[in-house]
Image (cartoon, rainbow, N blue to C red; front, side, top):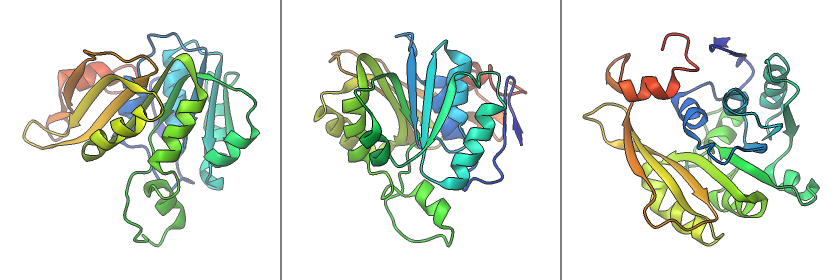
Length: 236
């Protein structure tokens, strides 16, 4: 079990464990539009949805998860949280979920998608599904965001930095445009390896772009990372 300040996460059944990417996205996602409804695509343990339940007053926070074990664990984590009346997880693929919807819209959509393009098996089918973007191609994710995002909605995700230009171009085909970008590096001397991206339907000429460094040395976190995550990690 992973204990946060206001909730805990069981992760023994899930292929992909809690990692920095999920925590970053859950803490960073802009909520200045005061979301009423939130959707987490590919919820895993439910971490990001739980973080957003803590950060917002959103009445409807829904998540979808295709893997049966991860879905079961997500449901348990939701039910054991202080916000179980606002959280709901669907056991479905994105396509299956979309087929069941009737004009649903969400004010905030988040995803920590699988983004490894190689299809070499690790020997663990669930882990491969969680890591490899064949199971949730960026094009499918962006198409869903274009359809499901409310007029003033925000779509947020974390992807490899090298994918950023292509993803921004892909978003433009759905008339979604960058609202905020934060590029992440592990240490001051390491290369940028992640991009936190927020999109909206409004085209902003001078949207903020900044950088975040996580550590100065092993377990020596930067003030910026500590400020971002201090409401969640026990020892921040």
